[in-house]
Length: 504
Image 1 (cartoon, rainbow, N blue to C red):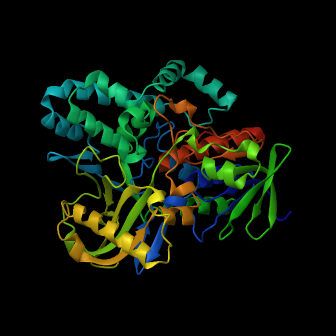
Image 2 (image 1 turned 90 degrees about the horizontal axis):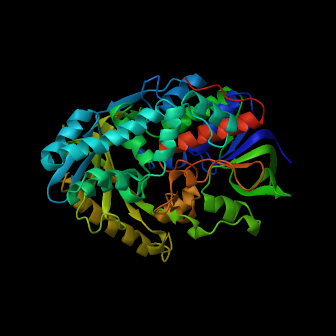
Image 3 (image 1 turned 60 degrees about the vertical axis):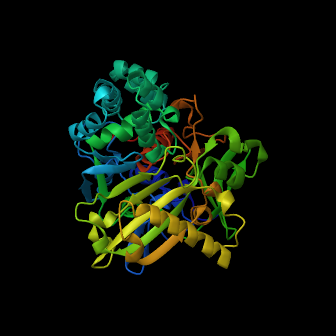
């Protein structure tokens, strides 16, 4: 065995980095292995010809300043705990939706302004709109009161239950409810219910019926409190700051060091093996990989294999990273947009266009006189596996799909096709290759009828092997995987006899 640490973390996604940073700050030594030359996974940045692109995520919760934010506003409190300064720019609109039948609405930070736009479109549903979004407010109120910690930590659960008995019981009951069924208690207009579906789909890639009410309360209520805040320097600033916190406290991050297997003996994890054959030992291992990559690739013992069909597999993405002439972006243009041409296809591959122009907030991400446009759609790896990545046919297929997406996007950004000066395209094969994610997937999703507590937690069937990231509770999204990292660190720290201090 080579260099050792108390805890080894596989992958530098936000969940794993959060766990490592909090453990290292508590005096539990950590060693992070990352395949690439930079940290962050799906929440990273990459550079091309003077542009700094967000690899994936660009809508960020968790940076508010409300000190009573409980399990929310985690980024603010984690960086405060680590002593790391972090600067963000407030975005007044979460997402500007462009939907069929001329229905367009910006989801504003100002709650009354947002609800007013819905009242104007659906005056006959005004009372139902109030009641539905009030349900989300109630979830937010509960979550903003409860301290973050592991649901597998009996000491933490007992403390929360004793100090917040009514809210704990209320949250437990709400965890069995879906966003869609709750909406249908109050709302009947089909177009409005479609809008609520796309509100869920915007981050969960599932309709509202399949989306837990608790998740909706985080994403759709907190946008009116903590709000949406964009990191100065782009999404890669978040993992960079977490790495700074890890190294500041004496932890280590090893780049270009791909873990190829988790060392398991007698049902207990005791280290990892890298691609170069070297082995490293630890008292605990945290996998930031997907549940399929962890147990079907990194763990070679077939007894621990996870059936692909145990969960729904979220799709992957086809992404366009564009450098454009700044003149194509109007002065009053919002940063984030979602385009749906027709409701029949919105949840099919390529049906919904996600779109952002982060240089509206942070011009430093592009050369002077330029903007960044990041557009992407869902995609399945099956439609790309027939291609050799180096072939002309692969390039032609990418260009053809990109042209279609650009053409559709010109409905809100006329002249885009003529303003492009740099174009970088990524398929599900790209995601699989760079992020080591099974089929390039966005991760496992709950099946209809499952409640959020059925999402895997941080512990696994293998002793001393833990998990963080979007395969664990509460699921997809940067703030969600941050919570998974806090939860994982909280559980491990207590097992090591060094329980974490509450994040303030």
